Length: 457
Image (cartoon, rainbow, N blue to C red; front, side):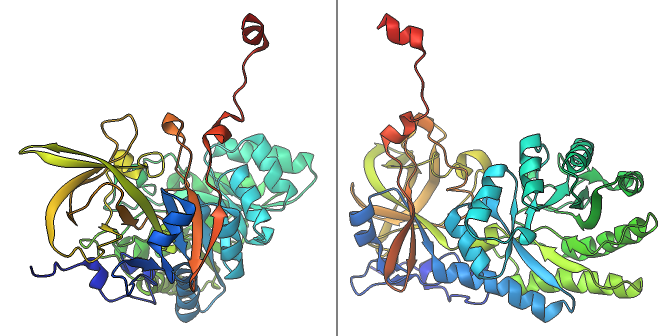
């Protein structure tokens, strides 16, 4: 039978990993099976069990370097790419990001602590969030972390806390520029109707108010227009809008030195996806800011951007083991795996699509069947793939799902009291644990039985 064409045969883009479905180091071993980072996937599962998250170090580092290289190429002023750690937060990721010279954005005390423990310098961390607690703000102030102000409530407490600490605090203002992107409405964050940021029409009042505070120092502006974006034009528009806001701020005595344009560059989850390259995205936003500054005779601010998904997603894969099969004649065949919505909630939440293959037959040779891949959780909607074409497979075979580095581990849960998977880093034939596998007993650590129930028993 003729060999089935596979996405694994596509040419790898080393300069812009977000344009690949698979990690850069993906290969077919001499055994005809799937290898990543010079490691046999089958051997990794034999040693570390499944489900299993795997990150490819070379893909991660190439993604970081692509942003730095493009900013140095297209933006004449200072620049700083900042990793959006919500995509995948861990001490390891923080350490790798820091080693590549990137900053990091955090949205909770937990993410801030993880960043600092991972070695990210506090001056390269920014603190986001639309409902920061006093405890979180105090943690940021004590650690000299720049805070991005999201709303009036933020501003009131930042003013109070910085005054009580007798401590000057650098802040940035997040505003909604009103740019619409063709993306899922749940992740479209730059429109006028958004839970994030100040409305652009309110900014002059805000600038006036900040100029009358004692300890708050307005350092920069932030805007973010969405996620998994394949269009360049909205980011071209964003640069000019943000520079115009700098001019407004100057009228109130504020010297804006930093522009943070957010992130949102899409990645290639499936063969139908065609995102811009990192180089194209950075060129678009850099050119827009430079042009607007030159037009208005402004010095170039430090340009920041916040890639998350496009740094880590393509570097990650998830491995599952096939268990039960259920064939419904004339309708479909379900195969069930040993994970699902607790380790990847995106399909049931966003109807997200991925690419996958059998570890033992990655090129999909002799493909004859379509399967619906179901998770093991007690939800009918726990389905990872609907009608995916795979080579014939059996109980015990392994499935690799690509593009799972972002928002899988970080959004994972213990639904049905299922422990979270282990996470590995692979590079040059070596595999190392970066997050340990949870055990069922780990899930009982914070359960407490009231004393009166103990006495009754």
